[in-house]
Every structure is written in C-alpha cells, then in structure tokens.
Length: 74
Image (cartoon, rainbow, N blue to C red; front, top):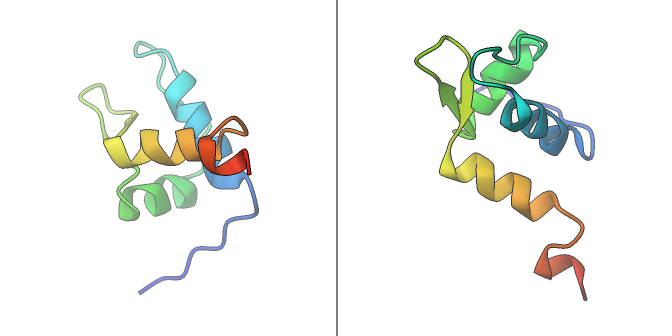
C-alpha cells in the first residue's frame, strides 16, 4: 500500500479546488498523484465529463476542515 503524505491543509485545499470547479470546466490543475490519492481515500470519484466529483466522504472532509466546524469551537 502506498503512503500518501499530505501537508496540513492540503487535503482540504484540493477538495476545495475540485468542489469549486465548474462542471463544464473540470479541475485539470489537480496533480495526478493528488487525484489518485483522493480516489483511493474515496473522497472523489470520476465524473461523467472526465473530471472529478466529490463523494459524500469528500464533502464531509471539506466541511470538517472548515474553521467554523463544531469540533473547532472548543
């Protein structure tokens, strides 16, 4: 199994890039190794247009990274 090394905040950054991508213009600037890691983590899945789309797990990870998340308030 490959170990992926993300810097703090990098996972949320790339999930945000994918989430903000317009469907007609997929996020092509996501490095292939990051896209592969996010697919293995099941945070993204291939979209019908050839890009990537967030899964429920990816949306949850993005929401948990938000500074306003309830676990950050303590």
